[in-house]
Length: 337
Image (cartoon, rainbow, N blue to C red; front, side, top):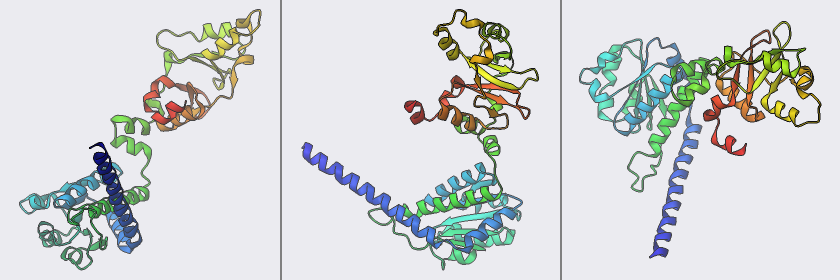
């Protein structure tokens, strides 16, 4: 019995790999078939003063919802619209300022095809993503992105699989081409993703850095003892003292680890040593205009615990502590550390 189960399991794995290979090969075929229609679609949407209305029926409709969400999150205003609901009043959501993106692999889906004339009367440009260049949808659209013939990965060759994968991939390509053309910036992405790790990583480093009493600052020319006393702050603090000169510019950093190592050395009065002689000069820093992602990458790559944040004049305006961003560092990097 165990041997039979094991052989069936291996058959499942082999078939799963075949499905993935079929869909991967289809994506490469679609890549090679993209033509100037894709370029025209991008230019048309860039000129759009309204929204991209994405519609499709069944599985294509679900893909359309994902495409609309990707467009919206990457700088192109977009909304999904169910074609059947559109035929029963929701066409009022479309104006001539919008662009309609219609999905149908066959290009003959009744509910989608019936939208062609109403959309034409409304004056909104119609872009189609379809498998057949001679279908009703392709011929009725202003622009048709034709995927070409694709073999479905379904064992019956019927269930939408390869075709929907290709539609979604082309939708991603369209969204990201538009995003790149708009020069969509990380801070804009963060504004659309205020929650979760994506939003935090894309937000300004100012949102996580410690300021005020949470920073410890001392001046050059002090002894270690004097620097520790000068940098004393009530409440929560970081494990580092930022050493600044008379103009307030950062000259070095002295960490709790540095203090432990100093106390372990053979000095009659280690705390009486000049802070300038034992601090780390020219430490790794980050500009206040950087993102949280930039800070996380620097902390991860250098295995630092603290990262001073500087303004244009080289003066510290904050400090990022590893404990504040540890949850945002990828698991593989944390494990390697």
